[in-house]
Length: 149
Image (cartoon, rainbow, N blue to C red; front, side):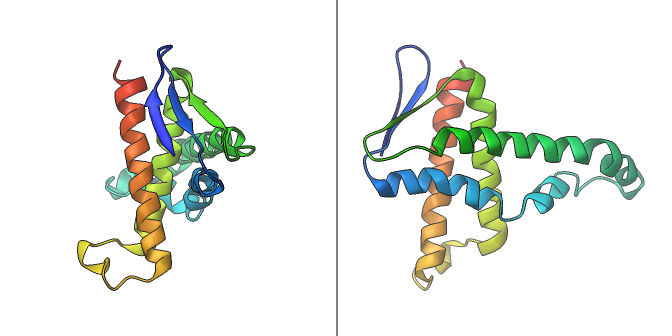
């Protein structure tokens, strides 16, 4: 897979194999592992007396926003195959950044990655760690190429 900014201000991701397409589709599956917990975790450091308002007013909107981000990314990757290119425009940057972040947070919550576990980790954990790193790299490209212009 190759990713680079385009001259017209978008980010282009070239899908060079079916494995590349599967990795992009994995963003959705990874992010949806724990959607409720991720939305609730955002308010985790809030004082207890403020939690009731948070739960009533902010949390439903946050869940809807997370869900909308995932839906937008799912629509973009649903039909990708070998040889296809995906273009992310500036108005899609926030949805992509959020979906990738949700996927990374869900993977971290599930596997509790550490540097020491790589040598002893099974294939599932190694695969999850590689996906998480890939998501982080794409987030960096989105941030650099689309969000910090």
